[in-house]
Length: 69
Image (cartoon, rainbow, N blue to C red):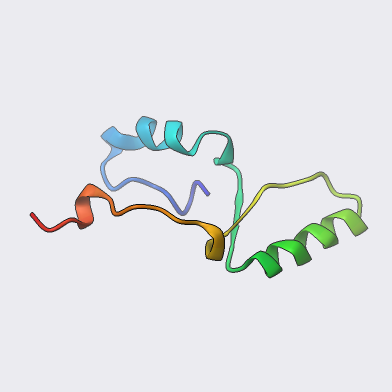
């Protein structure tokens, strides 16, 4: 998640980190199905649990940078 959500301006780094919170180390994947396959793989090989954020399940709002002024 850190590599996906880097702010353009370093002054916003702390704010972005606060918003992301406990998901800062989450693994971003394309779909819920991909996430489930990865979770099954982790369980099969007895790896520690991870947090996945499938893009098909993430909903957000437009940032100020994307709004016409």
